[in-house]
Image 1 (cartoon, rainbow, N blue to C red):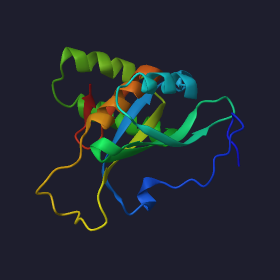
Image 2: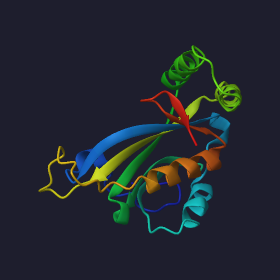
Image 3: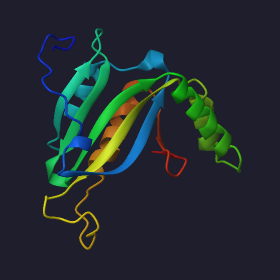
Length: 176
């Protein structure tokens, strides 16, 4: 199997399948489908970062736009699976998010974001994982190893690349 650039993709393995990684949370970056970034745009933004992230398992569509990728931050003990999603599930969930957001008073900034949200019909799902040694217990939280810097970098980069909004669906709030 090859992706649009003609390079072999190899076997795709989600971090969900890797016992060294424990899922922690999921974030969304929502945007109008017409703003879906190509691989080169997102990669240029990632390359500007000072951190040594490892980007693997990149999958592109025929036009060179991002389908999915995995990003690992070895120094921060974290990683992310990022997947492009569109369709009625996305629009229905965004409508629900907008209703929930407007059920209470909102800031001027969130009111502006809400206007932008109305034009969104696609998203990147960002599954955030913590890397644990196989001997570590998932319940052993005496020492926090997870550095969220990579997560916030990826959310910011995706927001910039697609002119979108980052959302924490667990709390029902915008991020950044």
